[in-house]
Amino acid sequence: MDDIELTGKVAVVTGSGRGLGLAYAKALAEAGAKVVVNDVDAAAVAAAVKEIGPAAFGVTAAIGDTASADALVAAAVEQFGRLDVLVTNAGILRDRVLWKMSDDDFDEVVRVHLRGTFTCARAAAVRMREQGEGGRIILISSPAGQRGNFGQTNYAAAKAGIAAMARTWALELARNGITVNAVVPVAATAMTRTIPAFAPVIDEAERTGQPYPDWLRRDEGLGTVEDVTGLIVFLASAAAKDITGQAIGIGGDRLALWAHPSEKAVAFADGGWTAAAIAASFASGVGADLETYGIPAPKPPTA
Ligand SMILES: NC(=O)c1ccc[n+]([C@@H]2O[C@H](COP(=O)([O-])OP(=O)(O)OC[C@H]3O[C@@H](n4cnc5c(N)ncnc54)[C@H](O)[C@@H]3O)[C@@H](O)[C@H]2O)c1
Image (cartoon, rainbow, N blue to C red; front, top):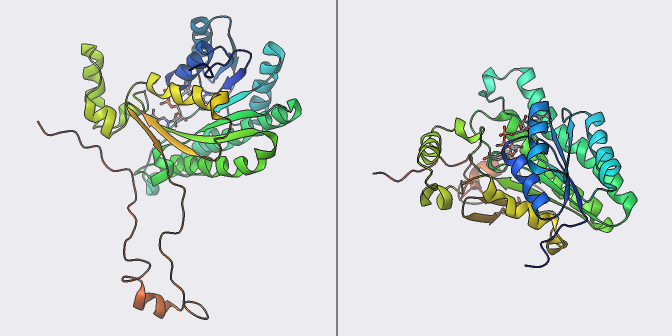
């Protein structure tokens, strides 16, 4: 398709030294964009820049701080003249059940994901508004943020907050032609290897060089990092100029639009609801079809 073309565009991808971020940076560069690569790991930044070539410029910085966000936008402008696309991908996990999660576990994850997304998007929005030619802000959320996930108080909260920020910024930046969407990716990386149902399948595919099985790619929507890049390039392009405020899932063979939270069942009581009135009607009324919660456990086919 002719319009998936990013020549002349400049992108920043946070946490792009490895994993999904590196795949995004490579795909954006292949589509013609110049890319500011970022990671907290300097060796990963250097390797990524070497791999991508002259279309890439590296900035080693820890996402979270305002200074890092400003440095990334400044690098885009100084090296490549402008900023068109921001992908806020940098992330960490510090999984623990609630009663064992420390303040540091909580703060670190919120700092990188939630605060880092906020500081980077703010810096990008300032620059994109000054340029006056629109822009693309692509936030990275997660199934954990949509549904909750065992052991991920910090991460699920941050990722849910990121989806909420996408919807908020889509409103605020609409007049400037800046779209803001949340991508909900799933891919085999260092992160997903920690999920017991996936680890052996990922190891086996790597050992044999065979593609991931269909159940993984279709039912679980889990594939390679490259499987996620098509959505990032699409959202960055002119073809996606009218798409904003959405949470879009991708992984393996699967592309999905996540529903936004909305009222599913409503009932009215004149003068308001007392506790007793709720107790009398909840199970047969508003609460008749309760929602599920948590990411469903992966279901490998039984042999
Ligand atoms: N892999 C998945 O299936 C999946 C699913 C949902 C969401 N995500 C999200 O996608 C993003 C990338 O995940 P991944 O699986 O590629 O992880 P990864 O661990 O392979 O890569 C993350 C990268 O971010 C870097 N990073 C960490 N903290 C940083 C900081 N403060 N500043 C700059 N860089 C930092 C790391 O050094 C690493 O290179 C994350 O936001 C993650 O939450 C991944």
